[in-house]
Structure formats: structure tokens, C-alpha cells
Image (cartoon, rainbow, N blue to C red; front, side, top):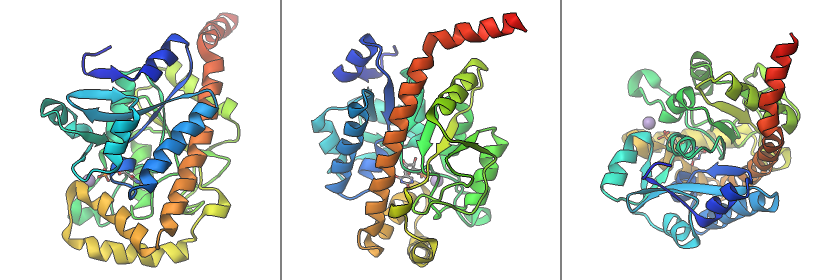
Length: 316
Ligand code: PSU
Ligand code: MN
């Protein structure tokens, strides 16, 4: 393991006991939700995984190390400290050099998880192509990482603060499979469907695990997205969300770069009087339940799957 990597005791134990491990990001904690709901949500998601026999590994940068699994004190620090930097992949080396405390985005978490040998990652939503692309040219590094790192991301699609058709086009260009779990459509975070159809759908975690295994066996270098829609009873209809998103977008006109997404998330929480936060928490819990099941199914397939593939080839 690389010198920069520091595993938590829980993760070390999981490796020794050959238990499945799932990565979690930390930007969602430090820049995606307000305190203390962010801390409660982070604990809850970890607990949902543990209850399934899966070990959570929340990833962050701290004191010159990439932490794979963090303790309560650091989690509290990430949740309740406005000095925590949002680190995408670009910022990792800088944060480690300067020993800056930083949370990791989807892109940075994928990179660090892969370095630590973790192939499954649960989050809320990915970044994507921002609107008005011809003026701002703002494309999340999450998409570039998905193009280059073989980690499976379980999420509820992307928020409609982004240009979702262009986000899907870009994923297609980079050969990133987007698999709808029990859905034919790309989910739009707060709402069950964006109305954009997906080409691939799977209805069982066993099938998803087989797909991931095959992706790995083929040595495909890009990531995978398992798109798990928000539960219907928790969704906020588009007609309620759209005016709020428009309003937040207008207020964000003077903001650029990496501050846009956190600003939009905070304004949406304020403008919906916490309703969006509730939906956000429900969808992440739902993703943790699904991610845990996929991790267990993948675990079952483990080394025997390799032998089975060789046998199949011999048979043909
Ligand atoms: N979308 C959400 N919640 C989030 C994020 C995105 O619904 O917390 C965070 C994730 O960490 C994601 C990052 O990786 O924002 C994307 O930021 P940017 O658009 O600057 O790449
Ligand atoms: Mn950006």
C-alpha cells in the first residue's frame, strides 16, 4: 500500500477478515449539507453498511495522509468546520503537501478508493456538465475520473442544476456504462426520473455484481454508474424544484469554479426550507442499502468467478 494511504483500524480488520468494503465521499459532508444534519447523515450511512456486514471507508485528506476510513473526531471536524477544503483530484497532491484538511469529491474519492483497492463507492449524486457550457465551460472532474478509474459509483444520478442530457452524452463518449437499477430512466436526484432514457437496466444486485465482475475481468479502465432513483415517497416533483433551481442559479451568477456546486446546494436547502435536505438524506440512505447489497453479492462471486470464466473459455 502507498505511503500516503492511512487505513482506519476498522478497514484493516475488514481486510484481514476478508469482509467487503465500500468507499464513501466526504465533500457531501463538508460542502453538501448543513451541520449537524451532515454529521448525522454520515453516521447513518456508515451504520446502514455495517448492519449489512459491510465495512464503510469514508475517505478524506488529513495531515498529509489519504485517510481510508475516518474516526468520529475527524468526521466531526469535517462536518463542523468551514476551513475544510473541497478537494477534487486536482487538489490532492497540494492538500497532502500542505497538510491541509480536505474533503474528497466523487472524482477524488474514486481515485483514492482505487489506490486502496476498493472498487465500490456509494454517494448521493455525481457532478456533471454545468449549464451554459459555451460560456462557462464548467465540466465536473467527476466525469473525467469516471472515464479513467475502474470504480463503481452507486448514486441517484445527478441534480437538475446540471445539464443532464450533456452529462449523459459525455458519459457515453467516455464509455461509462450507466445502469438503471429498477428504472429505465436516468434519475434526477430529487426526482425519480429526469425523463432521459437509459440503455441499460438491471433489477437485481446479483446481476449488477456479475456485470461489475465482467467489467473487471475485461480490464476496462473506466468506471461504472449504478443509478438508483430516490424512493418515490421521498421525491420532490420537478415542478416544485425547477423554480427553486432557477432562483439559485440566478443568485450564483457571480460565482465560478469549484464554489458553484456548494453554493447551489446550500441555497436549494435554504429555499426549500430543508425539504431538499430531507430528500437528499433519504436517497443516500437508499443508496447505502443498495451499495451494501451489491458489495455482498460481489463478495460471493469473488475468486471462484475467475475460475468459472477460464472454465467457460475452455468449454467453448
Ligand atoms: N452533487 C450533490 N451533492 C454533492 C456534490 C454533488 O448532489 O455533495 C458534490 C460531490 O462531492 C461532487 C462534487 O463530486 O460536488 C462536484 O463538484 P464540482 O461540480 O465542482 O465538480
Ligand atoms: Mn467545475
